[in-house]
Image (cartoon, rainbow over all chains, first blue to last red; front, side, top):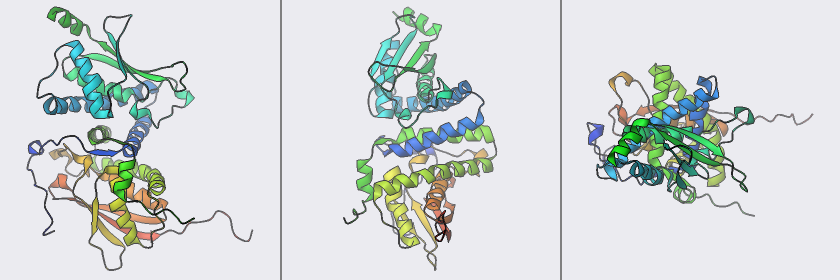
Length: 194
Length: 186
């Protein structure tokens, strides 16, 4: 095509400029894509916990890359080293970039020292998903739990992250809680840092 | 009551709810990576992506028709314009262009310069036969089949393989008239 402006060809994808991250696609495009992800994984597994694991693995990959992107672009190549810092990074910055708003709440678990919870009234990925009764406790938020896990593990805070439905009085649809349970070494390091 | 005027792609895109394109890009990357790990053969992955796109396309067409208020397209040329200008804009936020019409108007190319699926992507040497965006060809094929057109959609140019744009060739194979389940005289 002669005459139309050609996009500059970069030999290496790493040389391409990052972009501001303001580009958008429609929610339905993402919802369709996510539903295909879940449907494809349903054909590959035998039970619910395997399905959740696969969704979590997919989310893990997304989380690792989001971390690198955000640290470089928004945080000026500085990353958090303290527990509360990284939690608020996930709760505010990561959520804002991925879902357009900060998470509804961040709480510390009352029963265990190493547990923290991020709550959301309705996860974006669950907007168009309904869980049939025979799938019990299955939660597509496992994908988001995977994203959080990907971010935390790659920043040096290994954790077990899961997603749960929490029924709320007066509300028809239950709230979603992402439960983060940090590994022991994280708490020991945090105590040492004072 | 006169039918509402068809809306432009920009107007629809501005009115739908939107999400960050990077979430979309990274999720698609996770899907392709999962497929590559499970299926291992690049050809199988291409087929699976096309199938997934087909599944999306047959549902996407309903939303497209509902939101865009388009009336029946008179011919295939109009259909292709609709896909490029309205369809791509309202779902992916990018505009495509249509070119290279053949003599009888059944085959054209849709060219995309900007593609949100492929940000940050590089194909390694082991995956050179992969059509990374093959889901798009499935979406178009599925959507058109639901409006009575059987088409064949193939990739002509792919930026991940070194070309300068993304070019999809859409070829109309035949129009399948809608079949009514009841016979008129029974």
